[in-house]
Amino acid sequence: MSSVIVKNYQADERLHIHLQLETSNLSSDGSLSTNASLINFTLSRLKTEELKFAIERLRINLNKKQLKQSRLKKTRKQNYEPADKGTKDDSFRDVNVPIEILHHGTVLDETVLNEEAWVEGALLKVGDENIPISYNLPGVRLEKLAATILEGCPLFPAAEPEFTTLDEIDFFWKTFDKKDIDKVKLQISRENVDLVGTIQAQSFTPQADDVGKYLLLVSIPKRGSITGKVEAVVSQSAITKGPGICPFEARHEHTKQHSESSCFRVVSYNLLAEVYSDTDFAKEHLFHYCPYEVLEMDYRKHLFLKEIVGYKGDFLCLQEVDKHIFSSHLNPALSAMGYTGLFMPKARCSEGCASFVRQDKFRVINSHDIVLSEYLSSDPTCADIWEEVSKVEPLRECIEERSSVLQVTMVESVEQPNHVVCLCNTHLYFHPTACNIRLILAATALRHIQAVCDTYKQEGKTTAMVFCGDFNSAPYLSVYQLMTFQVVPSDHADWSSGGREQLISTLELHQPMNIKSACGTPSYTNYTSGFQATLDYIFIDNDLLEVAKVVPLPTDEEVKANIAIPSRVFPSDHLALVCDLKFS
Image 1 (spheres, rainbow, N blue to C red):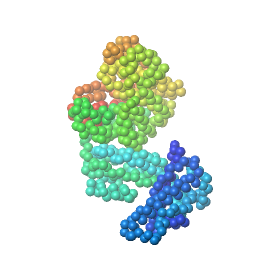
Image 2 (tube, rainbow, N blue to C red; image 1 turned 30 degrees about the horizontal axis):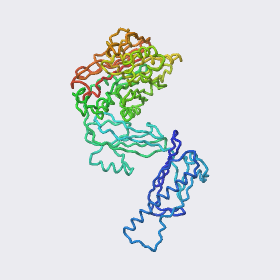
Image 3 (spheres, rainbow, N blue to C red; image 1 turned 60 degrees about the vertical axis):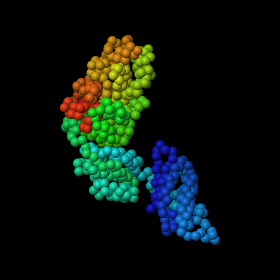
Image 4 (cartoon, rainbow, N blue to C red; image 1 turned 120 degrees about the vertical axis):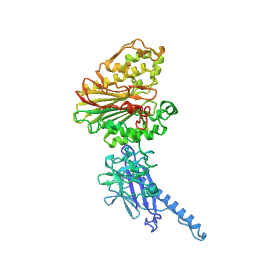
């Protein structure tokens, strides 16, 4: 069956026209032969170009296809019959096929522009055949299913909608035995997938009786009453047995429901990026106690998604998020659950910070992200700090090399638009002798946050800060002191952490905000066999916010059950912090 599909992307200067013509030989008058076959080709034409050029290109392409088929048929015929030298071969002549576009039954003038010609409701007439033009059909591009699929862990489609939204795409899931793989793949190739026995849902969680089976995902894109092309993918391998009950599921008992209407729930979590876990040093030294297959991202990503989803947070602030994990795993899943996702990679790095905001409770109004070292050296609010840093060249060079970023996302309450949260997310430099670097970067972050908050307060909005992250700083060190005590004197021990060559002895840091750690100072938030400390915090504006609930951390016994974390039941070397906050 012949078809014409036109795609008009707003940001593209060209129309993309795909034609499938059911014909093998067209006579000069355009009539179809009885042994028709399919011819496919695509045109990419400027929207502002006159129609006659697209028609001419279509005619040229059609002739080329016809000539190619004629030659192929002649070659096949000669393999079976001797050539008749007395017969003139006219199979390669051009075919002057009448091609027109009709609007409401009237042939369109060829001087009309392409964007006005190739529209919904128009007909492309090729010879005697009238072919309806399908304009901006809803579509979807499905990514492959994960290489590893775990029993008990939710799976979401990585789907990119086209001329529709995720909400308007129907997803169907079905498990099947290995013996049926070829049958299912044949159905997909013929675009005739059997939906009998499928489950229609935005996600799928394999159960115990699915282990050893393969998984089929079918998507049907729609936009109103219009249905687009069905797409389907099959898992690369069979569903494998999951880890069983994980300790974070006990924490989910405290988050069975979303936060109350007067509160909002915050989650801060360092996921342990693949760029750090998938190294020989990590496997053989840092996490030597963790089996290789468990340390693999293909395993861990299922666990931390299951964990994060179960907290039902309104704000999710994640650190050490690999770019590809954000785009292919976290964002598709959380977008399907009603979150807005934002990602900021570290400078010169493949991982960064990701923040997610639950759309039915808050709306994102702006972003003010910065690279901390760049902001420090260029913004007037930090001029006093940079002046002192610049006097110590080794310190200045070290700071300029740092890639740490600060995500600042301004969100407003859906129910109370005048209430704004300045949601901040960072991951500070980790080196054990870099307490001075972390202190300077933390002070830089606070200067920026204060400036942003002041802007919104001047507009009359109640603006409260929530600052999440892995600060790589224990409660007895200067970063925590600056946050909670508002001052770090010039003689603090952390100024000398980088040795004499990086020492600043004249800089005293202040910050005016009344800040507290919403989850307090637990015994640790990072636990490996060689290191345990509290590094992660959810800092809040203590004048405008109060803590309604803190979700308890796992017990020591749970964390140490497999020596340390990560493990088969803990996807990261950090623990997630979860709390409910409300405006005072």
